[in-house]
Length: 141
Image 1 (cartoon, rainbow, N blue to C red):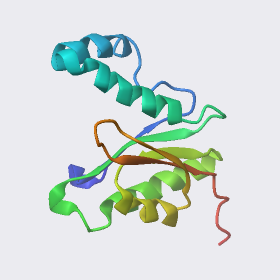
Image 2 (cartoon, rainbow, N blue to C red):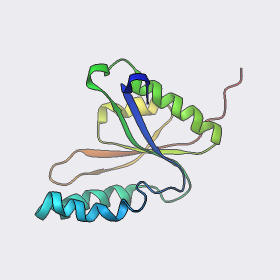
Image 3 (spheres, rainbow, N blue to C red):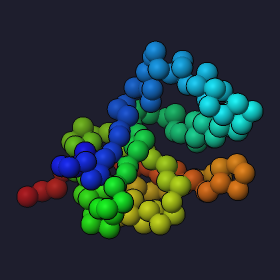
């Protein structure tokens, strides 16, 4: 998170679940309570994300990157992402993300992510692009 909470990233470390117990087992009942008859559609979205997620090796997963509207366009989100990736590179581990905003794809590519594939969310939802990044070796000084 940046100073003042202007931008935030949430990374899931290799081998860790996106949501740990006891919270994970509370998701389905909560969705049913909140969405009622639309719960199957919400679960369908979760299933699409899960099906697209690589199962091949340990990696960091960028679950969330957000910038407060008052600070968008100042480079805070990309600065934070670049800092995060430098730490991940020191561990020598790949990274994965999904983007539902096509305007961000070139930004992610500029820091080394490549496009893996894509899927469309139901009910005329956006196209979600999956992206992968191999670790970058440290720069010589």
